[in-house]
Length: 110
Length: 320
Image (cartoon, rainbow over all chains, first blue to last red; front, side, top):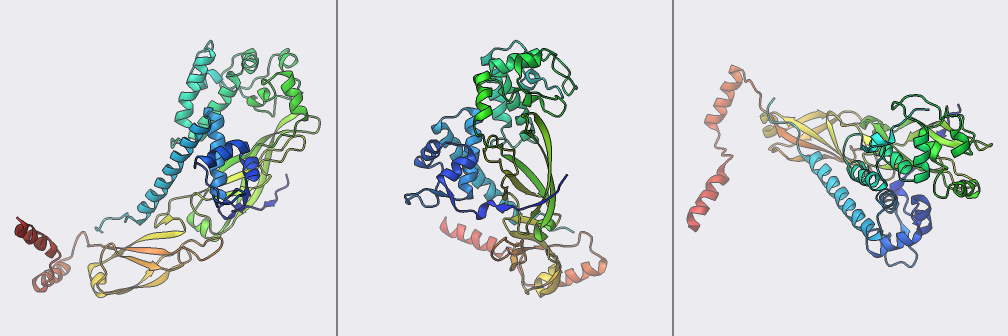
């Protein structure tokens, strides 16, 4: 079997996904993506711009939305609530991780 | 081909109706869905649950599954001789496929669905894989071998499970929770559809000394009381090797001494910082000489670490 070295892309450095890109990469139709943007569950890089562009967080959120929609048969409203709560959980987990990293692990006894 | 008991996976009887199957799936999905569950092994468990539900929720697929017969989970089996004529237009070999592959072309319009699949461009499936690496590997970058087994149709339309093995270089600067995209390394697209992508989720092993927050690192720095009072120059470990750190006199417990750019490198831009968190550590058992010296210090020092207690108490008395 041929083993080749494959090129990888850091997702958090890609900041240039169009609505079409996100639809293709996530599997969600553009109409659903627009509905998620309209209710604030999916945030484009520049909400005021006429053409919607997304960063890697947008792609990851859209992929999660696709899984939730498929696996729980959620409508756009349910999807928006689930995505908003997931984002809050991720944010809290990140803060908790930071606090744990900053908290000393050892006691003052040797 | 290994048998899977889809009814047992969903925890329902063989005669369960559609509503019972849906209810069982929803309950298990809420518990094990990888986007909402933190249970160990949730992702693998959910894959089984989703596969069972995909087959049992569809009348045609469920009938085809029931016609396979009953075996022990994990037991090698082949479908009955007339099964293929009745349910499949695919010339399966039955050896190098998964049970779920048998039902992939069924349902959703039966024969029509199968004909549609024969013509429509369909994108390949995306896959997500967690890659566990050490802090040292994240610091230096590492080549990892990735092995996936994915369903693929060959040129004559036969379905096989095909092993994909490739090497990927995770560049230095990876940190916990970061994602990498490997374009085109997921499942093969059909009829001109794009190949799926592979997403790698970086998971850092916990380190004995360093705790990770983004690209910054935190290290507990134990100091003897006299080192904290007098100051000291110490050797401190970093992922790039030991460095000398000057601890200023009068350093207090909990203070963070910053070592700029000694954390994890970033793929672009400056490396993160390393923070040494000071702890004042006392010997559990002091020698006679140490005890005598501490006694001498206690007798001669005017230092009162609880002066603020008295201030607060006096303040409380005045306000009454």
